[in-house]
Length: 464
Image 1 (cartoon, one colour):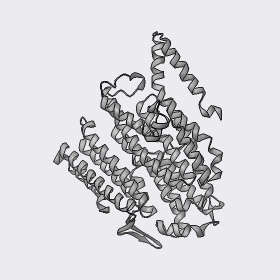
Image 2 (cartoon, one colour; image 1 turned 90 degrees about the vertical axis):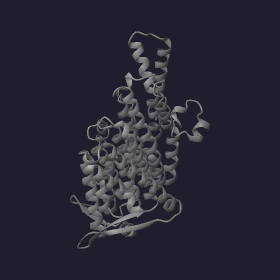
Image 3 (spheres, one colour; image 1 turned 180 degrees about the horizontal axis):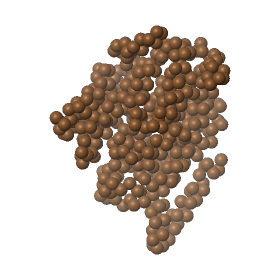
Image 4 (cartoon, rainbow, N blue to C red; image 1 turned 60 degrees about the vertical axis):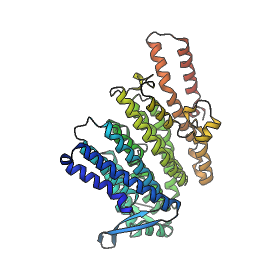
């Protein structure tokens, strides 16, 4: 069952990629979607057995290679963390596959497109089921081949893997985690300096996570990825590539826990990314880029949680974020098609009557945090969900509970939490400004414009 979950998408990619011209467009779509849906169904069964039933296991398939002390097996490690990621990857990817059948119907190379989707999913499944760092790097490279900025992060990841083998003489997760306590206080010669070994290795590994999960300074590839088709954007931003860094650091948490200085760096960069990306998102007019910068900001929150050792909170947010962000991207694709490929939000408005289903589904995505608590405590203005400030309070409590040193960057959390709320209101403000500029001097528009400016001035970042 475990091997089928991972290799069925690869089988679909091979059939559609190599035999697509023989079997035709429709058959390629049916094969890739059917195999992906089967993989999703098996992932649900695994989640019930492993995560809910408490039956983790490791399935060794074969020995990959041996070279001196380096012995790397090809194994599938399925524990609770993996089971959660299997659900995220297969469910979102299955929905993207089915969505692509209609969305890409005009494409001239449908079999190739469907093959790439399945191949991308296979690499992500290899990453989340890896039992050692080398196997993880195989999947890691597979989901990031097209982005040059990722090569910077990947170089850091490779140095981190080399450092792990140099220090522990192994790359297998179980052996690394058992040996980590004994490495506390050891030094390593890096760039001509004697540095703490675990801190240096963890920082190098985090550089890889920064590139893959678009953290501050290595984030530039994320908005540029919006040039691709919307289904690809949904798959990259929701369930595969951007979540790889969060997963990797969570998987290696037994190492990071013995490197508190590295965790402080993770906390700081996560907080900086959360507020930076949310701020940039306020200025965007492209509907997909707004969602992309939202993704970048949310990833910052995940790393913030990891930095204060709240790994379960980070993975919970990763899972919920994957579903609502995929929904928002696919909804944005529907809007773009309805607007004849127009992506400028300044030219949109009042089309909900024409696409009511998309309108309703995007409301669901926008209200993903509301749930019962948001409806009870923030019944007014439900479109903003929990008004985002609950997120700031949550992370404040997490940081104080798990790691007191994180108080240095706590002021950034509520500030970043306020910005998406302002972004959610911005389209109506832009429409009012446009009407005023066109000479339609409506007092209601001017009043709304003044209220918007007052809201911006009340941002917590200005108060702190």
